[in-house]
Amino acid sequence: MAGTVLVTGGTGYIGGEVIDQLLGRGYTVHTTVRNSAKSEPRLRARWPEAGERLKIFQADLMSDDGWADANAGCDAVAHVASPFPLGIPKDKDELVVPATEGTLRALRFANAAGIRRFVQTSSAAAIAYGQPEKDHFDYTDWTNLTAGVPPYIESKTVAERSARDWVAANAPDMVFCSVNPVAVFGPVYNDDLSTSIEMVKRIIDGSIPLIPNMGICVTDVRDVAKAHVAAIEAPAEKVRGERFPTSTKFLWIAEMADVLRQRAPEIAGKVPTRRMPDWLVHVLSVFMPEMKQIKPELGNVRDVSGRHSEEVLGFTFIPAEQTLEDTARSLVQLGIVEV
Ligand code: NAP
Image 1 (cartoon, rainbow, N blue to C red):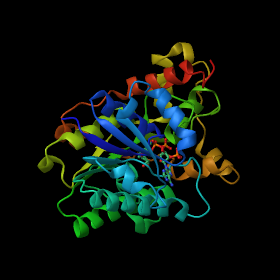
Image 2 (cartoon, rainbow, N blue to C red; image 1 turned 120 degrees about the vertical axis):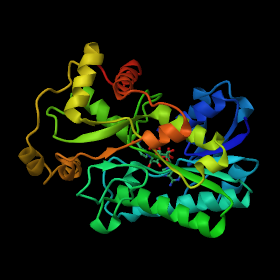
Image 3 (cartoon, rainbow, N blue to C red; image 1 turned 45 degrees about the vertical axis):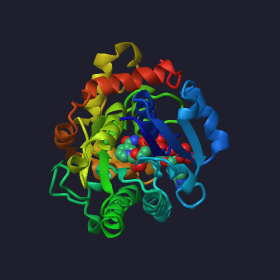
């Protein structure tokens, strides 16, 4: 059922994988980038055979320029672009405003172009925060913003809520759903690393000498992209209004380090073995912003189930151990990490 799909944020880790899978399935892909002079050569180099089946448009989340052309002739939108920085901005609106306004802009232009299928890349950030009494979550849960959450978490929650409200009020016949990944890992294709990949890089390149007492849920970029494609292709009644968390397994960082040592011993020489005591994280957080981000996560289980997505979309996620091994191997193969 190939057609034409707009993928916003084609330079990104997830956006690139969605484009890759769509091209592989015979679609024509339109994609938006912020700076086409910089990004077009990179995208053309990744898909040299795509030719006219890949069209690149310059469009920023904060401006109307370019969006009408990007949407023209498309059957569906995968709206992936959103700021996802490593650090915490001084002003939360640096994230909340582009995430929310950008999503509403993408929806408005898609609706104006007559597009009736819209898949938003939301996040487990919109599911599993601000509820200290809970440690297991699923697609029915929503992050509680009244508890006070970091700017990125707020940006994804407000963007998904606003998108759903906008569709209900302005385009009730549009088939809207979200994909809500946990931390995304898997093979990388260039040295422009997504924030989630930085974590594995720092485990295997020795820049984390001690392992903090924290954990995360793992999902594979190939499954995240597959969920977007399945959500585009599924019958409308199956996906309308749905939320599709992609998540394979909750792992403590210490367990991730063990997996890397067992599955890729030849590249795991610098993977730390010793634990960082919680008191040290507290002390370091006074002058290290990264430690400040880790502090509230110490000892927390935040386990998001992806079972609902596997059942509705009809495929099984790649095991987390494979995902971590493939992440590490690709970082070494590309020369991003030296062993
Ligand atoms: P990424 O590699 O940093 O990609 C982010 C993309 O958004 C890039 O293409 C970036 O374009 C684009 N973007 C950012 N601000 C923009 C703006 N103002 N105008 C236009 N484009 C803009 O991150 P990713 O991991 O692929 O994340 C993609 C999406 O997945 C985001 O919505 C993120 O919230 C979500 N997500 C990611 C994870 C994860 O662990 N990676 C987990 C859950 C959800 P430039 O190249 O121009 O910067």
